[in-house]
Length: 286
Image (cartoon, rainbow, N blue to C red; front, side):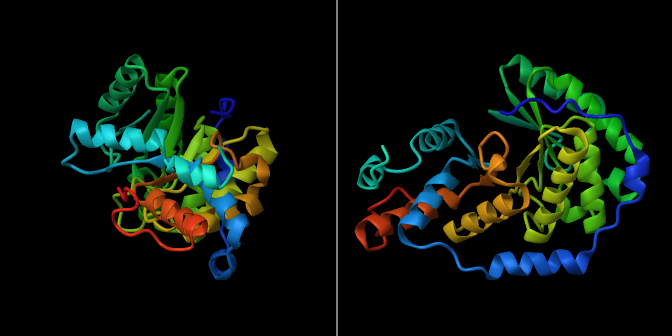
């Protein structure tokens, strides 16, 4: 992970002035989605780069130790070795997940226990009610307590943007989370009706940029939920590169939360190497 975000004092005067130009954000999002992707060798290179940003996740209620072991193996060996040779390229806990409305004392204790068990990254979910009712000081204080409970572990704050009501609220919640010391801000838990979208991402990325310009602290970004195709992953990389620059295109400052994305990326790399798409038996599509 990157250097810790120290956070700042709560600046409500900054928050009160924020207004997001929604039509402009939507136009920018349309440009990103309409853009043609890179081809051939460049595409393979960018897809391999995308693999380095993926946080493989599972949100299933029927997970077992064996299914988690398979997930860990896939995280360790994401792309088949023979495909990499052909191209000449040779832990986290969510508290109050997914509602964010568990009692604060319980959530703080969950963080402490996770850190004691060796967690180096902690995911927390904000209480959306605090955003919808404009209780910015309460939101700041809550996240500040999470930050303190994390100790040396990095804090990743999930905003659940699909439930925040407006893009202006998304920006304000992003800024409050960073002021309170979040090391990453994340779009979604993956359980909301609306998860990671380009308009929301643009607003969050520009909040990150504004916070960096004002404080010098770099905060990471993680879109999560609904990112399933290799083509989608390239669009996300392009967006981060254009909004924040190459400095943010590292796993220390950018992640993609996904459960099925890796399979499609491996399928596209297989096609690049062999000239055909994999049959079911050719690749482990799980």
